[in-house]
Image (cartoon, rainbow, N blue to C red; front, side, top):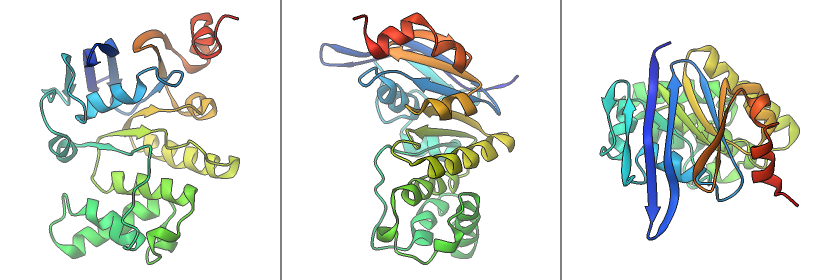
Length: 238
């Protein structure tokens, strides 16, 4: 299967602290790669290194056959790497549609085309009925969907989801899992950092586990969460 994204020996240091230690990953087109690990494991740091928000001191990132290791995030986004963020920061004074419109302008300089693309993204995440509502009025579940819609409006070929399920109640979680599953059905490649094991089990084709910045296990999601090394990393040995 063709590879959409590959990261090789990614190492990130903050001063004397090694936050990510020679981690490699490979994401085929149309597949979902899950990234899990306890708090402080280095998941978001690796995520940021792959998407361009943190510069690795070692290793390289290959996207669609091109070395993008030194490219800034906005260049990678234009190339087809879209992402969400853990903390939702909408333009609260703008409507839901206008928030997504900002992202849609990346590939649609004409407003009419950008609005059509923004509305399409809102339809994908079930927020089209809130298009004219101020973003400040959205609850957590809808803010997460807005974050996803903004990422989709950039036309990603690889989508990076950073804990987009966190804090959702069971009905909202089921909805979000359904939205993401719909994207995979369309052939999008997805790398997701997640603590919600239900989402990892239902969505990921392959799962990586980080602990203390290093890769300690990988494989099918049900296999890795039963791995003794993974249980120890989450729960300790006592």
